[in-house]
Image (tube, rainbow, N blue to C red):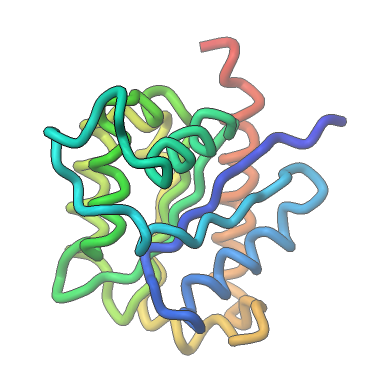
Length: 181
C-alpha cells in the first residue's frame, strides 16, 4: 500500500507546544498509512499582503504552497488564543487563498487548548470558505488538552485517544476516496 502524503501544521509557534506533541502522536498512530511532514515554519512567513502575492512571492511562501500542493491531505492542530485563531496560523492560511492550495484537499482540524470552542468555530468558517474537503466530519476540539497528552507525544486520556483514532480513520478514508468525488 502506498502511503499518502500529509502535511501537518501546528498553530502554535512554541517550541514545546502540546499541539506539536499532538501532531507527533497522530503521526505515530497513522504511520502505517500516512507519510507525515511536519511544517514548523509558520512563524517565518511574512505578514500577508495581497500586493506581495503573485509571481514574485517570497520563497518561503512559495515553498509552503508547494508543500501543500504536494500533500494528499492536511492536518492542523492548534491552540486557541484569546478566543481566536493564532495570528500566525491565520496568516499562513491567508497566503494560500490565491494559490488554491486548500480547495478540495482533505483537511483534519483539531483545536487543542484549555477551551478551544471560539477559535475552533472561527477556523472552521475559514476552512469552509477556502473549501477544505470534508472539514465538517474531520474536526474536533480537545479541551483541557494538557491533562490528556503528555510531552513525550502520547495521548493519555482513553476517550481522547479513541476519538483521535476515529478521526484519523475518517481522514484516511477521505483521502483514499478523494479521486471519486
